[in-house]
Length: 393
Image (cartoon, rainbow, N blue to C red; front, top):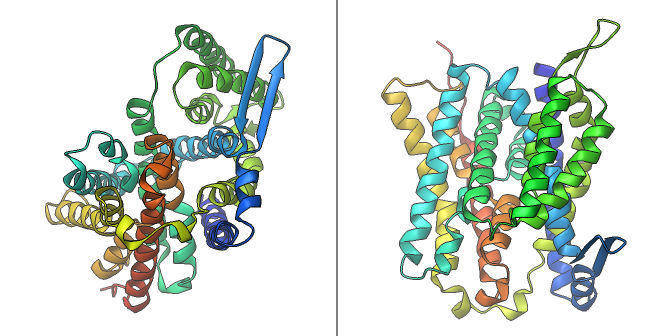
């Protein structure tokens, strides 16, 4: 298990570093003579058609956000299921601290955002934007600190981010779902039933799950529920461990996770960052930045996340509900709490659901995400750089 965690942390860390460079490239494209090419690329129409029976036509940016991100959520689902059954989240003592921290990291930022936007119902749709943590970015920053940060702290951040992702999934399902199509919902339910049967009969052929999963994705896309939730549903129906005819234990989940993790870390997330982080800064003035949505997002990420995570964890420890990770000081934990304000990928994703057209706010909402994540990353890094490990007694 330690080897698996190590490989996971390594991939997420390197992916976070790649995301930084891709974001810079996207900003260069959108703020130079390449901006016209960049916008044309984002809005290139791609069609999927099966005779007259089925037609899906979307611009490339939506294929990334609705399609490729479903694979990202599939990986998240696989990680959550594995960690809940066999990993660091399988024991209540290991779950309590990151779960409480994640809860604080969702509640407080949402309250901060609501405090700025309670008078505007449309603006209030973005309340969930500052509640997310980008695990790849956060672990990428931690990796730059090397052995200064104990492994137990990295695992705490990983577990907290997993609960954050689970919270984001529930938020998307309940708060960012359009009107439901009954027919598509029925077909989607049939697909889910088939996937459950495949799991019950211990079917290990991943190609069968892929075909049913693709049909389910189309059904969910047509229902009005966000299609990325298909990834979570599919992940929880794939068997964790099966004994084959040769009496050998095989793990379809680990096989699939191993196959898609590199694709997610080195292609899907960078592609998502490239198509969503390209903000034309030439069109944004300081006056435009001074709006309730921008302040709610920025302060929600930079202040709300660290305040929520640290205060909830501090109270939980003081009330003897749980204890700090091994060999971790309070200052180090505070540094990680600040890092949870690096929302980036998930915040941009929720932003795209809350405000379909960011031009309404002159793209200041996306810029606020970048600034909140940037401040959280830099300050968190500085705190952890100067924090000392807790001395063992």
